[in-house]
Image 1 (cartoon, helix red, strand yellow):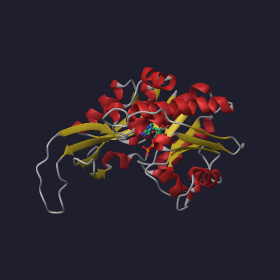
Image 2 (cartoon, helix red, strand yellow; image 1 turned 180 degrees about the horizontal axis):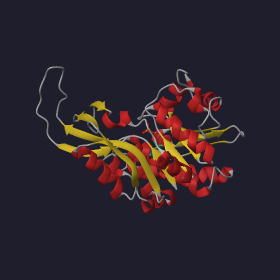
Image 3 (cartoon, protein in one colour; image 1 turned 30 degrees about the vertical axis):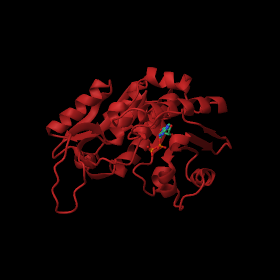
Length: 303
Ligand code: ADP
């Protein structure tokens, strides 16, 4: 069982031959709305990967909020912890040109109002094997949920995205940190560098780190001295948006099913399976609409 405390946004995506300059108006081509937000994406990813998953978050009292709620519910996510707050839902305004160059403005809206968590949320976190959190909702809510998880013996998995330096108050509650190379450098406060150095720097902050490496796969290190790297399946990447969310959701599911990291072989298996989820997402167009189900992950994992 997984609990996610995080964001839900509606992505409003326009395709255009040319991105406008400030003050300019251009005629676009296509328009789509796609449910997004790292929290909601990872909840859908976990549910599609086969776990019971509860989402705790906030949407506004608007049509977008209903779309976001329906999308989570359609994936089988428990939305009893999704509240409706005054004001607009979170949105991302995205313009993409023919070369896949983009412009994105995010208005967090309701996500910024997720500050007061209640007893029902605490119950959902305590009942979960893994609490999955990101950084698109106010930090006090993340810290509160992580504190409940720690007290209940629920594993805390933090995907530190979008990247920012983190207070010790949160880092002390994290069991597993999941980051890409950019996020790793920001959280560690170093200019970047090779994966081994990033893992070393992060192990001084948290007990276990998973570093995603795009097409190269993922690396793992923990304070017990275990270190390993797994390759990603070779695929034809079409759209890597949400690949990180697919990876993180599947990682949480694998961790929950194994009841912890397990042996080196088990860590390797969990990471390879999460890489299969990320790759399955990347080989299809679309963001959250491309999140793979368990059969697709298994098929690519075996391939
Ligand atoms: P983010 O999207 O958060 O920056 P990554 O780019 O590291 O994260 O991708 C997350 C995971 O998705 C990778 O660890 C890998 O398993 C998978 N993935 C992403 N891009 C590719 C690719 N081109 N080929 C195969 N797998 C990929």
